[in-house]
Length: 218
Image (cartoon, rainbow, N blue to C red):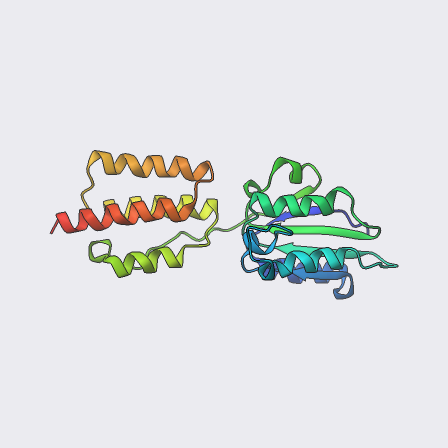
């Protein structure tokens, strides 16, 4: 079976793991699934804790272990920030003999053009679940804001866009009366998220808008 470097777009990571094992065999595959890829997939970045970059070092080490037969390194993550991709790009530009790479992510949009140009992109049809908020915005307090920000602190761009839309919809649904300036910020936040603005900053402002409006409405 011919092996090629590729990116697989899918959000069911367990399903893809099982599929790859069935397709290539357990012995050929090495899986790397960083919990915080934006931090763990950096290497020699002095601004970050080197102890947290063990995944990057492990991938580098595994890539250069000589193999008589083909070996596939599979990297699975929800997001890949630019710094992480620059590290990976160094491996992809000059891959060692018999080493192949498969990257699994939920969206093609997380990748730089320089990464996409080196891979076949295999896109699967993804059944997305609608995001649902399980709390009353009219009861949002400061502790609730902290809980909200903590829950969504590691979301990627697509999840941030969906969350902003959901919060906007819930404000309307829960009859939280926003003024024109506040409504306009939701639109601006959505556009900024498209441009890779940090989700934590956007969500902090939105949460404070909801909190202040909730207090004024009561």
